[in-house]
Length: 159
Image (cartoon, rainbow, N blue to C red; front, side, top):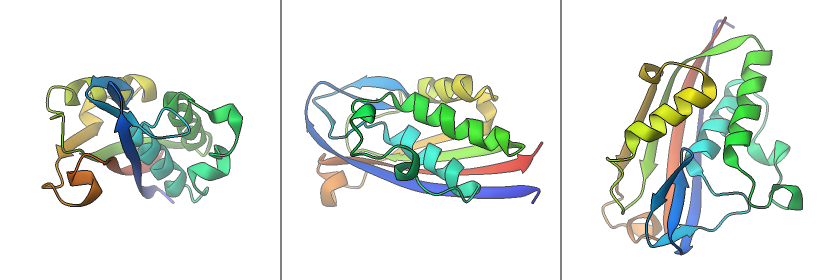
């Protein structure tokens, strides 16, 4: 197949803390993610979208959350691993679209840094990466600052 699409969703509950990590960027705030790894929902959703585009299962297949080896694991390593599978199969990234849902803090001042970080990790042009931040209008756990979520989609094509 010349083109393949992947999409995924990740969510983590929040607890009292002093920062969350989104797209590899530490964002100061009054909470942190409850997670086995570093809880980076952006990298998790994007990594799983890559796996999905290749029909290779989910993150739990490769990084089980009950394996102590992955406790506090750096999610950039997860992203790099999943991208290595994309390249191994002979594909390159056409474009990435990510939505982050978080009531606060507002993320507009961090979006460019997240895009730059992803572009650097994947060695692609920043113009191939779209990041959108939104709230959940104070509805459910996302809107009450009890969780953070990310949706990621990507299109890959044969090199």
